Image (cartoon, rainbow, N blue to C red):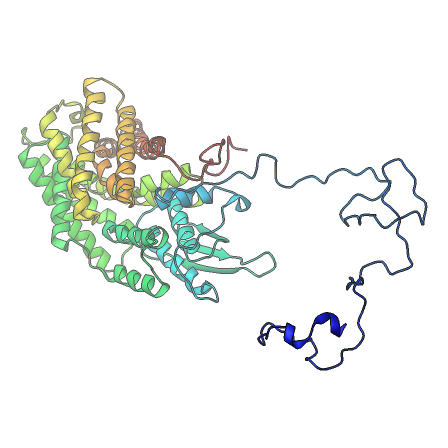
Length: 567
């Protein structure tokens, strides 16, 4: 053995790394080893002297001891001898697993809404946009940040589906993919379950105060967009909390006196829209500004919003009755009261309530519509109180004034745009969005006037079509700016609100004409529902012009909201 290895002069010096630690050093007698024909064998090999059964072909018998050295060892996963085996069914279909495609170019609202409508097992694997620690994301902090962002969105008037999509987007961006957000009218909750064998972590938050500030809403949308899609911008949890605190501390873009002046401009423009002149404009503006200050006084004393709406509705109605007592034939007092009602009708809450109902969030929709009903009852109480007082004083309130023609296309288009501008200021919108929503409101009134006045189509149908265009353009504007659609929609529906039908319905009740009052109030309710449904339908139609992400190859690109045909 030693001779076969060669002498030291025939070997090249080797380094320590090239020499195994188990090789005896040179010059040391080695123990006798196995012969050259023997090789190390596995402990699972058949010992010497035992024979294995040769693999027999199907239908042939094999006797023990008939094996030879050329046998091949069978696999442990092979079908046993004598068993007619069939291949196990494959879990992966022959055509492959359907791939879910989520394009990064699409807004996060569409991507997250698509994922929320998918079953959990069909959702694609998470792609964490924001970096977390090596130990994983801080689950309680991520859930708390998600709830705080959802609270600002819900308090600002966003629909329940959009709030859930935003909460899901934030939690998923920080690595929490197994999250289920839940949104109701006043309660937000989110649950995260790391795995099937671990306990879920659940957190909730209550929305106690609501405020209309679309500038703050746009800032929250920008924060969500940076968290979910800006791969080149790192938004840590600390940075997200800092930006959220700045958004909360941010002051309103318009001071209080500007809001009061905007309320006057809105009421005056609405009075011109229904046939008023210069004096009517001034009277309606004065009544609306007085009502706005009175409502602020009640709010400062902590009274509920019901009494605030009631107080705000009384000065415009009182101004109209005072003009009626002057017996002037050149002034239309009904236009003054109607203008004041335009500034009070809760169009924003109505649209949000109907949208939640159409998308399947019935609890939130019911609560929103109940809130609208209370606001409307407060307005009705304030106006009826003034109308009953005017009837007792002998005011000649003429219900036939609603049939007086007042077709002034150019003046009414300008008035509708001024009304939309004032409404946008009252909603605290960003200055960059005011021009777009003003043009959107003007287009809505042109469509309504062309259909209802020139085409002699039903005003309710004309309102629905105009509101549908508002929703369509608002969604397209919001997708272009990657922000919420509310700043482009809510103010634009202002000229379409049923202020005139509401006033004359209340006047009929004040004059004991119950049937006429019910018919007119039913028209007002139908018009309001037409606005809300038209806005939602326009928003859904806008998706026909955009590629919605999340579609399965060869399948539908978007699932239904909750149920299909009621089943």
